Image 1 (spheres, rainbow, N blue to C red):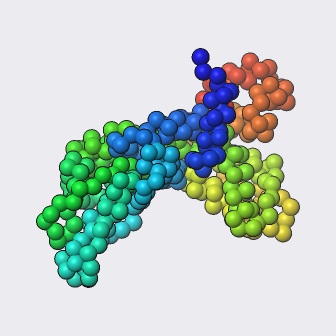
Image 2: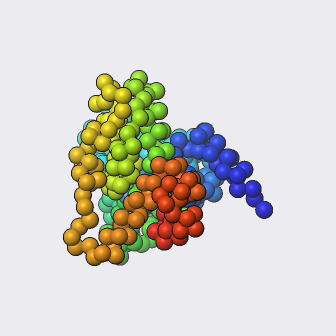
Image 3: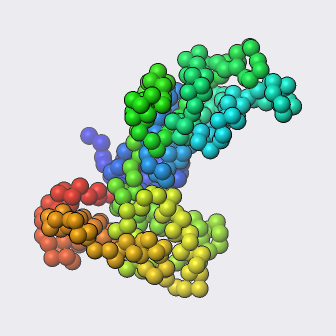
Length: 330
């Protein structure tokens, strides 16, 4: 039988030493476990998640903790480069193959040889590039633009998207054969609203980071501000939270605390909103219970006994509510 305390300490050390990822929720621990399982495997890895959930960070840590860590990690956002430039960026070209090709140039696939290639927003690849990339996966070779001789490559491919790739395949925008090549091993990253118990850890992590890297005064958030942050839905996920912490720290350097009035208007207003009129009584009550429990548990550092005593519930009653609402306890 595995000692859970020992596993917890080992994983925490690994997180601090390698992943640069923060959290203790069950859903983020599953991501850590996934990274450990696939880091030494050369099969393609597919990552799905909303924008801002850390898809590239997961990809980088699969590379940095695996057998290819001493080789290159090359990342490309397929949606950030115009289609007419993307082919030469990926596959490279031969001198004179088109106007402006003044020298031979290897593409990013070659630069990732023996290392890892991360393709973010893979669904934005055009049908032509999907076909060319499929050949790279099948034959382990490529041709630069303007060349006939194939070049052998050895890459571990990690791809990601925030789109529903199954729907993209169903509607004919993404090749089914490439889909099956890429989605051999896959993981869905949790949104921040699904791991609300990690918000306090993330706040401390980013305050420490900005204090160290930007020489900013490390300021505490007021209790009321934390209530607003915990009740917000974070559509931009971790990226949005990180930006919010930086903005607050920069604008509050003359203060001793970050109050709720220093938060972005959308967060501040969201915390003041009442339940929509369209809610029926039972839906409104469930929504209130869920937000209330997340906030009080965070305030008492997820100590269930202490939380129950302070809010007037038995420990068993609190446990039933936690289970009912699917609240994650780190």
